Length: 141
Length: 107
Image (cartoon, rainbow over all chains, first blue to last red; front, side, top):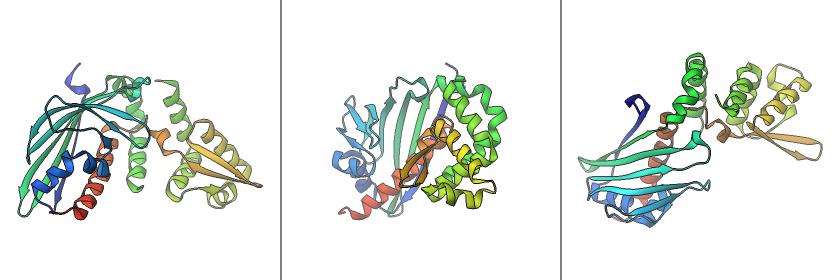
C-alpha cells in the first residue's frame, strides 16, 4: 500500500467550553451517544467497542490512546460485504485550551484501496461533476 | 469500474436528469407535475427521466391516488463522493451536535 492510498480528514472547531467538559462529552458513553452514536465506549487503552449508527451501520473500534483532557484516539473500522464501503481508519481528537474555551481537532486517517481502484479511471473526466456534486451536498443539511 | 458506479455516472451525466435530482435533493418530495413546471421539458419526458433515476436507485416514488410523489435518495450517491469530503461533512454535523450537547451540560 502506497501513501497515496491514505486519506486524512481534519475538522477543527473552537468550542466555547473548557477542555474538561469537552472531555466528558467525548468519553462518557451516554454523552457520546447524544452527539455521535450509540456505543459501549470505555476510556481504557485496548478496550474494544462499537459505534452503532442510526442507519444500522456498525463501526468496530479499539481505544488506542487516552490522555485525559488532551488526546483521545481510537480505530474506526467498518467491514462491509461491498468492498467500496470497507473502511479502516483511526480517529484522533486533540483538545487545546484557547482562552476559556477549547480548540477541538479531529483527524481521521484511513485508507480504502478499493476506492482508488474504483475511481482511478473515473476521476479525471468527472472532476467537474464531482465538484458540482460536492457543492450540492454542501448546500444540503 | 463497478456496475453500480457506471449506472450512477450515466444517469447523472444527463443535465436534465441531474437538474431533476438536484431539485428533489434541495426541495424534498415533489410530484411529476410540480417537477415538470420547472424542468423546461414535457411531462412525458420528465416521467421518463424519473424512471431512469429510479432504476439507478437515485429516487423513490410514492403513489398517492392519481399522483406519484418522487423523492431523492441521497445515500445512493455514497459511492461517488470522495471519502474525505463525506467524512468532513459527517464530522462537521457531529460537532454541531456536540456543541448543542455541551450547551445543555452542567459545568
